[in-house]
Length: 146
Image (cartoon, rainbow, N blue to C red; front, side):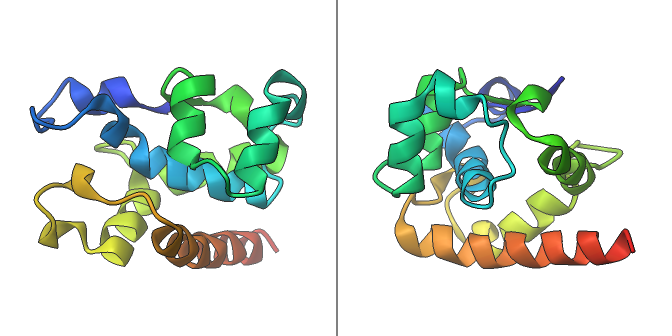
């Protein structure tokens, strides 16, 4: 099952002047956080050992990894059991399928103030900001399971 894909974004009202890599920015921030928190499928450490090491060391962005190693998509098989349960919860939404994840992302980065949702810069400051937001969501989810 595909949770998110650049195809979901570039087929709609995607800004014509942006390259496809911008459609992976939000997924990349999330994937990088997933990896940093060890919520990924451990097979990724075998399948793409060099790039996983680079991602963990923050030498490449999550978006770069998603584009080069994951064909621009996040799928259920990319996560470990807890990572998948959380991601299904965090992405769950009856309308768009992006749920609280998208709400948190949009609010944290104030994307309505940008030219478009896809104009978010890939940088360390945004990654750190979003990691705090994602950590809070994970904490709240874990607490709700008790």
